[in-house]
Image 1 (tube, rainbow, N blue to C red):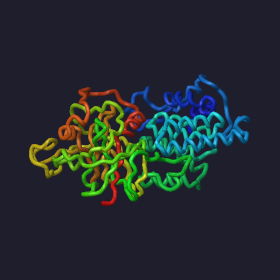
Image 2: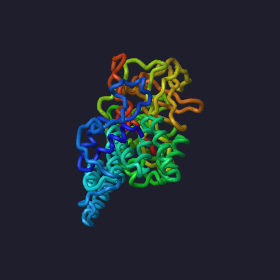
Image 3: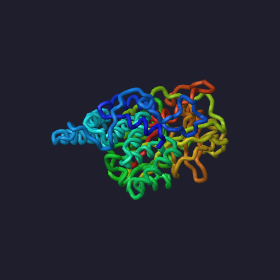
Image 4: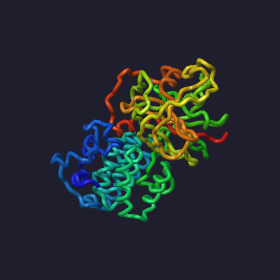
Length: 431
């Protein structure tokens, strides 16, 4: 862990928890995926305001309780608050869970309480805030390996693989036989970012709880999908959807809705299906697509969910790369259809090395957070359906057009936070 992080983290205290979390969200971040592509002021520095001499300077030893927080009554109240926080998370009430965990944190400065706060932040879609607070938890509670593993997982999801590897190596050095450390190591090595087994246990559960529509027993995650700008439609790979049977969509906040093919979507050609949601899902605000398709070599971020036979809720994984050269694929659609050139549809090689293999289906963004297309899996390599073909095919549902040639780059953690809502899991049940 960086010395600046450790020095800063030591200044944290439970009575200032709420204020500190907010300060950390704006002050603490980690190294970017590719710092050359992000402005200096957007880079993660792993520094807290407290390290600069600002804010309270109440120091705690790991696991130390205030005397008042160690009485039987206080311990019972703290346990009640922790149980309430877990109950609210399971019900999808991230704000209520955060408040319960933070009330518990006012009584004791302990890692397992902070992990509850972290999970509430993630379930609310506040990735940047969670990443900042996870840096504190990992840096202060050195005797609690779960905090480091949680931090490494969040870093890896957001594409910061190098610092994630360092953090996980520190956890392994501290507790090489810890089941959670070993499970995360296996997941990273295999490219499988679907939490299972010990990774689904509290307090360091590495996934959101599912809320909303209840999926059928045996439903499985088969691909990713893209939520469109209206929040009521999504695009998913046609190859994974059954001819009959139920379909559900779930975002990175665990919010789940039923879906079905839109009967108005009758034009073939892109290998995608337009799905109509039974209830709208939240969008991150105005969704924008560039006026012209991105060119080969453009930096891009791609999102994906790991296929999962257990159908568990998950957070998406994001990777950075550079868009590949155009390729041509024969299309079954009629000549002249939207997004088609004669009988051939133009695609690009994705150029972003997403972990594992699968049908993909998640969004691809440029540095400014504009949607440049949708990723599709292939036997040889993944490809990109450009935004121009998608907008021409699906119209205004696909968002506003932006003619800015070089938009202001977003920090990777900001882009990931946006994509927690726009990238979806596709679940299917038995026919």
